[in-house]
Image 1 (tube, rainbow, N blue to C red):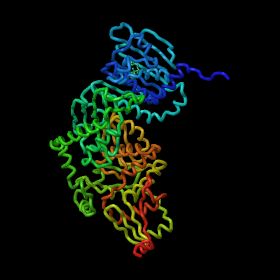
Image 2: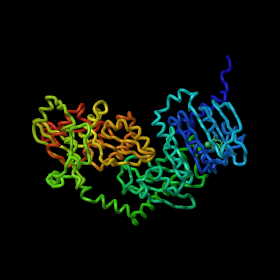
Image 3: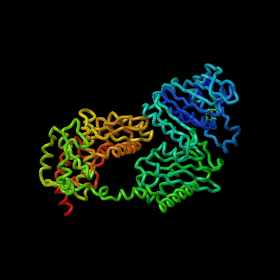
Image 4: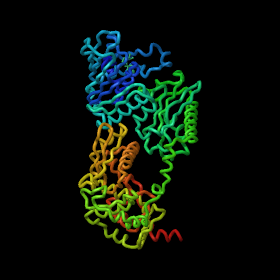
Length: 610
Ligand code: ADP
Ligand code: MG
């Protein structure tokens, strides 16, 4: 029998090995950015087309390469960063395995242009399928530009495996942010399909964090700084009030390398223990620097997981450092924190708008003299109109929702005879401002007001995305919102569906949007908060569930707009809510499967009393 083992040709071996390092555009972006950082660049520009599927280009002003190095860098295990195994344990650069460029050259069409300061001319190399196609001298600025086109053009199985542009773009932005956070003293930019999404001037870490995570952190970061012989920790953590229900603003860097560590995350959560609710996450950007001999970064091809020589010390240390900063911050609160607390304490913010207050406002002269021209909002596409009490600026949301529900549904809801029968008896009572107790002849229902409303809104929104859109009120004073770059991408993706749900939002400049109109049931002045909370909850949901985008959005907006526990309801509102609930296609559960009501039959109750 013939021998069967063959040595794979280089290009195939490289393609296989590439699978470990380059899974998607984002992995190539990470490697190229890190190479530019390692080359000592002070300016790094990233260009993408089609989320990196068509083009990824990184231009840096770093050291550049000699002609020979330019040729060599695409060889597997070609690196200038280590010479022997010992160097591996003293590594201070981001790269060292010498695999990235070899992998990239195996799965894309690559063009490299590079020049060192001491060289008159630079080198241009074109390489494809691990084979050099062309090498010429070129005039080039000092530094390196690497262009990779058509990622996975020769590995269709991998290319097909890539997600939508929007999804790949999110991965790319994640990687970009990680590198940009780690090196605030370097200028970074990101341009996608000709549009510049990030333009990050070199500056302090704090400035970089605000540039990347959003302006809302600007006065809300606490600095962390502890040095010992064993390790140093520095960076910033968010004040407790900035904690979000969504993960996303948590970053650890060990010797400037982004790492994931559930273990260290736990250390921080413990430090925040009594300051934030247990289901929210504080923001943190923490740098742990220690002797490279104390960490093994080589346990993972993309180096995102690392091994500490002594994990427990690092845990205890990180926790102590964070606790220390939090303690300092609470003894010497800054002005903006005090302000926030006092605003939050105001009755108008804390207490729901009661029926009594409402009728008082209605009879007030301001209300009476309100003419249509004075209204801040005009209803388009729906008959419903409301007059807002501009003097208090606070009108019951529930009230408006109920009114909207009355008029926004022209067809009378079709109740089954059974439902009609069961719902005709008894008037509803609200319990704990959270449940509605609805007695009928043979049983009573305990309806969870938020869950029920969530179901109702969900089905209404679902219908809206398929047919007639939700009524929009055009704002007389459009509100502009400035978003963090990753949210810009997300919102752009959601705009068409949001439009159907009553939000008219238009892009305005690079990172801003203008809210031109909102669903008719939304309070004036709440547009910005509503949008931010939609984005936040969308991210929260999508981190836990993998569902189609529209489904996720419907659930998010239904959840977000549903009346919350603690809201006082009138009898009319309760009737409307329960009636709408039982008219739903699937009344007994929220879109995410939580029960909307529990039923107690008379028999059942009698049995409980034996
Ligand atoms: P590694 O970074 O692990 O050494 P790479 O395959 O990423 O491996 O890069 C191979 C080598 O090419 C690097 O060690 C470096 O010498 C050189 N190189 C890569 N990118 C650049 C760049 N942007 N500027 C200068 N040299 C670079
Ligand atoms: Mg590298």
